[in-house]
Length: 224
Image (tube, rainbow, N blue to C red; front, top):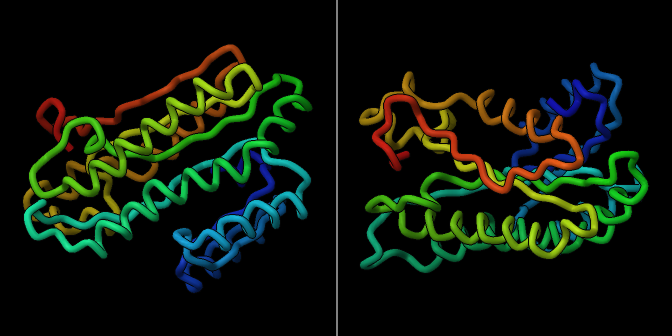
């Protein structure tokens, strides 16, 4: 999506094979891109991502926070290691990425003709409307939504604005566990989320959309 628009990119994931495939696809475009394998839950990796991007491209105009991990289970007896992993990936990593990138986002906003840089986070409808069995996941996504609100409160005067996108079930591997109940054919597509990100990036500098909820057409109100 951003490659089609000519953005210089740094992307990261744990899967080396997936990154190799992405690198091959990006090589067929005219953009400059870096694909860096690593664990987004690792603070040193996060810091190196930002530093590497600045070294390669000189600035950060947009930060898209799309990493996420989920695990279902009741609160009673929920394994702490699974809770810690979700906190690390779903909240701590976006917080640190934003913190490490903030001064560069401010500088880019000041140098851009429109005077704005954007942070976009993929949260979840679970962060707004909790469902049984998803307490840990929903809580981390609620924290992410709150982080986006805080970015706007602190940084909009500096030209940095933020949006949280909260979709219901999206047709990815993370939703396989409910496919028999929900049905993949009723889920949102990855492209639905991608197009929403594109729409946010196309907004004028005067427009801030703090939060967007993407609900499945066949879902009951407030449900994923």
